[in-house]
Image 1: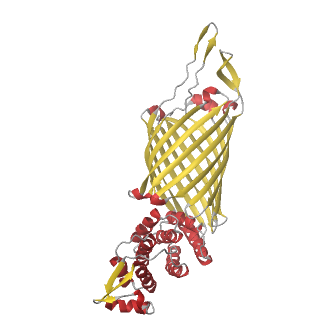
Image 2: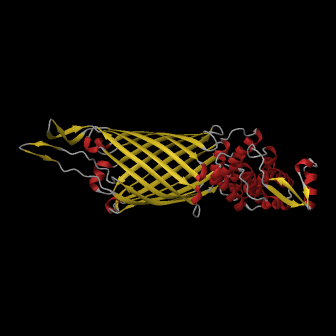
Image 3: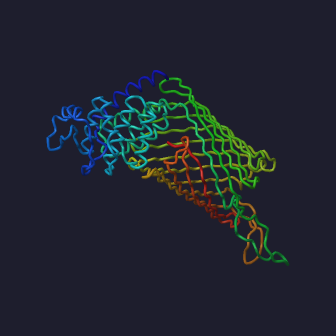
Length: 491
């Protein structure tokens, strides 16, 4: 992989300089700031030469000093940066007092970041670019430069994330679009490892997914209510730890491995949930997409008792159709085995699933993700076998002041193959009735995070969700809300 990174670095320095020339200026400027900038007249002689002897009306000589507007000073500094005279540009930009002209301040900090970036101080450049984007997330050029810095530091997943957003910007010159496509290909070639770690707490109003429906009626010579489970409120602490690594086999071939650990620990430990999974297999990448065929295995504990395990295979594909539109398609086959003999005698079976994703970037700050899927579960008892259909639409946006929001409604339909007996109430009588269950689940989730509270690369994220299940079997209906606080990796 070393020669690939070396080629990328050469291209990075050449094209980065070209971008500064091809795509000058971050945004159109407003009225000039009246804040003066005072410099030595000996240095001003050099400035006059660079500015082709600006008109005398724009400068005033007095007591061996000159005064100019902050906007003029930033323009001069930009020319010096372009000429590689970083010392003199730094003097101008650091001597300038802070102004109330936001475009001027953004341009000033952009030039400081550019000098750091061109001299290899990528950490400083990244901090400045992030600070600008926290306040002005729609600045395409800033996001692009941030992606180039992450590429130089070989942080390929972060580079790819910001390249995706930047490519959706408006009014990007064709030459820069081509550069972005090339850099995305470089990022895809070099994204050979990643680690993720999220943790948090989540109050749950119905951790056992129980119904509030009461079965009350007449049964024989008696009347009363059947015993049914009641909703249990609990506070859960969640943890997600995972990572992947790819062995580079050539320009296009990789061997990808990944593993995940997910845990929910509640104050009622009967509902604790621990899930482990791993995948491994060959992956083929090209300029617009990738395909991964992998063997998969998973293990689950529920209430700290062995619950089930599964193994099988999956095929994941991704393809970028345009700089704004990308799609993904996944197929999976699993064989499921349950540890408890009673469960195994009725639930052992296979899962066949397919899912699709469509991602579309509206602009450099907003995107939409459409998801849909079909799952088929078989079981030893037909009344536990089912077909499941699901769909969701997510809307995400990078907002001012460092906020990021994501809203996603989710819908799922489950149809079981055969009927079984349920306790129901009909005409005020309690009775057992054979029914085929049909469920409909709707879930609404809103996540909000803020990049200004970055702690070691993690940002606080608050997610509120509401879930409701409707069913033709009333005792299978429930609703619940969850408020989840997590610390998630920042991209």
